[in-house]
Amino acid sequence: MESKSSQATNVIRFPGARSTSNPRRDQRSLMDAVYAAGSLSIDAGDRTTKAMATRLTIFGFVVIDEVQADGSARRLRASEAIHASTARPWRVSKPSGRYQVDEEWPDTDRALFAALQA
Image (cartoon, rainbow, N blue to C red; front, side, top):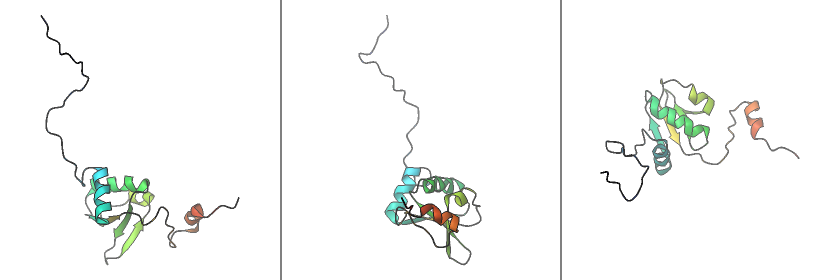
């Protein structure tokens, strides 16, 4: 004789405890930490966090500055961040506005944000 529960379920519980969110492992937690603090520094060799920050940069949620040897910061575009080395630490910040055109960008990049005449 078989016993059946009164309710059918399709939820399977995986063994082990659920991990808590961690800014170093979860994109949403990383973004929340950056927005709460204003900026977050990432060690030079932390590839995992740098990859998450790069994905958030692609969608415009954060901006990445590479910290130079003299302490100055250089803003990285998403295309640069994908190929960035682990030689320098990063500072991840929330963007100041929806679009920010840097005067140091080449004319070809600045033209993408120019107002089009109808």
